[in-house]
Length: 162
Ligand SMILES: [Fe+2]
Image (cartoon, rainbow, N blue to C red; front, side, top):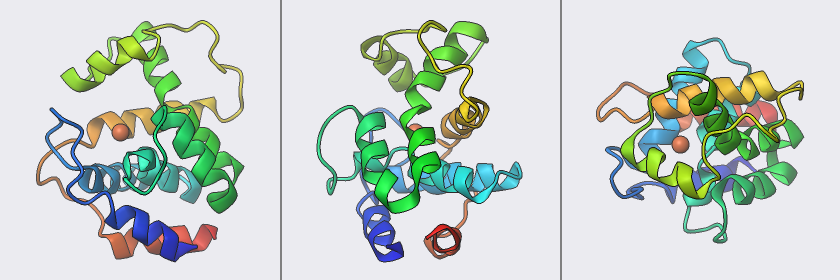
């Protein structure tokens, strides 16, 4: 299984969400590094790493939060999958309830994701606070040249969950 994660991470190298300043591999590694630095548990670090896994050309098309969650559930468990599946909802909530900065690309996609709202979101779910933490790591993980763990570093954490 860590092999599969390694392959999917490699497939994100050079994949750019048009308008974003870093590619998906850098974004994933920076997000994982921010989670680790914040003292997140292994599952949250790995969810941060793989929250945009559906951007991989190896995964099917579709809403990237749900496609990612479906791919991750059998591989890394229900909590990692749930956190990834909630990261768009967490964005909608943060923008609705906080003075929350988003990149231009993310502001644009917010419209097709249903807009800013607190309605209908799983705010009482025991994992919701971790989903909001993940979202903050996500949006901070777009800085060209920022320090980040290596693929080997993060695969060691993945291996602890496998
Ligand atoms: Fe992201």
